[in-house]
Length: 567
Image 1 (cartoon, rainbow, N blue to C red):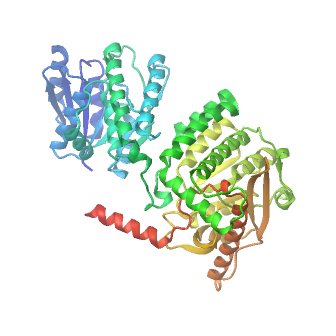
Image 2 (cartoon, rainbow, N blue to C red):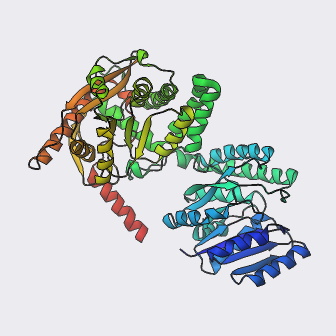
Image 3 (cartoon, rainbow, N blue to C red):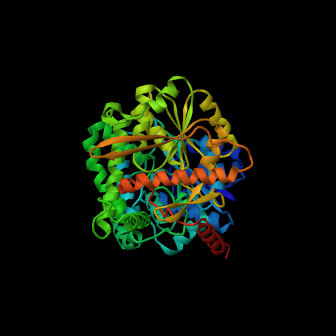
């Protein structure tokens, strides 16, 4: 990666000298763009460019706007052979200590745009702080996603090949509308946007060039154009499919801000306000989530063919059944929030054989719970945490773990749930979890999802009349921990939740000889029980991907995708 700095400047005299002095430590070439400043500022910039050999000063003969200045800097850097450019504002708002982290993110994700996610202090004008959320709202509509969490921060690393391609094909706004528009259009072009939290201050006596009336009119016009541009892309978005990708390689839909919005709504208006917000969101995901919708229909049709008398799947399976499937997922999410806020108690849940596990935990002995994405196990975990103060450690394979942890701490600071994000269930993970078991804690592992890292390490077992891949990792890990293993399902039945707890094995550990046979027996036993409960409550199956997809198909699709990229 070859990176340069780009700094637009229009009459910023107070902070620019200090900004360049602070940037000198990074030894990065810099394109400083004088956007038609007055004579005093122009002379200062010329002096600074002479002082710092790494600064290239570019001039606009008259003021064209921040967007035009940034564009000039980006295109000059691209023409000089740079692959990336880090935009920094000249007014001292940005925390330059975060530059190494920004560069590291860009090196790890060279095709992505890295954007600062502002963390404001008391210096931010309240009117500007709240006004940003109006733009956030429109950007979420224009991109049909929550991928862009903040579109107005001018502290970002651009991948220059993507930006130059955009400049050649699209005229962008040249003033305060630029930062927003280029982010949305790059997102439309397939550029990933990654955010990095960064402190932003408004220096005392700082100069703002935001023209209240005219810039608001420009931004309103820009949002109008982007909105109609989104409408033209809507049919393609509605019917786009990621069927060739493994479920774990598909970006999760939603973000920390989406989860936080739901949590804030809950705190403000409780369950019913959340429900009012949830239904439009569920309909949106139903309309735009082609892959999930297709997977839902595939699963429900398979259940119907395997169990024609299933009472919840009457008639020919169609979009109405799939919509019910999505709504069941949304209702389960609200019940989880209720549980984590301690508004659903153990007395409201049927748990007929709770003593099977409670006696062991009261004796200070840990155990493994093998679970699945069927039903609402989070509700059961939440209640267990509230009632018994049991430490629950949950293995998850997705990055939303950190998002959920952060929001959960806001909803319930006393939560004893520990979500552990892992990419693979290897020796390091097993050593960590062994300590948890020895401390008398619960370790919860889902056994029904493979990941992109488990390709070639799966066991096929019958599920709903077809062979489905199950990961070896959870069962190997349960054997390494050498403790009792239980199965747990929490299903909503006749208006109440019911917890089904079963002893799976006293231990999955055994001699090396016969290890593979033990794994196959364990996976088959797990698959059989999962099928039993999924047939009872098919609309509570929350694996919205092709569950029967063969491991070899995923490997072949990935290989073909790599070949296309290499070419």
